[in-house]
Image (cartoon, rainbow, N blue to C red):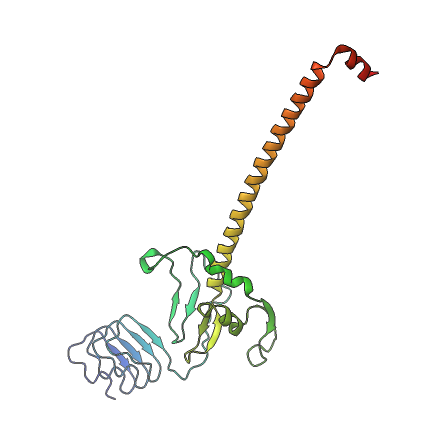
Amino acid sequence: MAALGSNTTGFSNTAIGARALLSATGNYNVALGDSARESLTTGGNNIDIGYNVFDVKGESNTIRIGNTDIRATYISGTSGQTVVGGAAVFVDSSGKLGTMSASTRFSDEIKPMDRASEAILTLKPVTFRYKQEIDPRSIRQFGLIAEEVEKVDPDLVGRDEKGKVYSVRYDAVNAMLLNEFLKEHGKVEKLEKSVARQQKQIETLTAGLQKVSAELEASKPASQVVNNNQ
């Protein structure tokens, strides 16, 4: 009932469910469920599935599945499947999925990390097990505790929809680890070059001493040389 009730100019829209796309006037929208996207107005090319899907007026080119009451998602056909050349998928506190970009097209204020990465040197890796209601198998985990990481650097933690500390941004930790590794690698390279220079100097000094010793030996009187050899 009242599905696409305000649609007078839009075309290629599909709505199944009471009040689905009630206010929609855009094109190429698909909504399935009671009150699915009933507040959507001019937006187009959206796919929405679920009862009372979270509404954003005028939104376009977006897929939304489920309402705010859903607390778990299972998608078959993904576990055990290898994807080559892909990118890890992240989810923010609102449930939005996406990948982490690193291109200059999406970045501002790019500058060397320098000493900012030294914060990770105070982190304390731990082993732990999730609570039984989360992981009945109680598999041992390896990582960091988000609350402890927050004390070191608040930018290294993720937060839930209420703003509470929820996870560790291991991708950021890995980048900081790389920076610290490169800094130490640079120190080792300088040390190796210094050792090489010192070794060359030692070899030069040794050769000089040998030459001086030979010259001194050659300058001794013949009688002294004979006596030395007896």
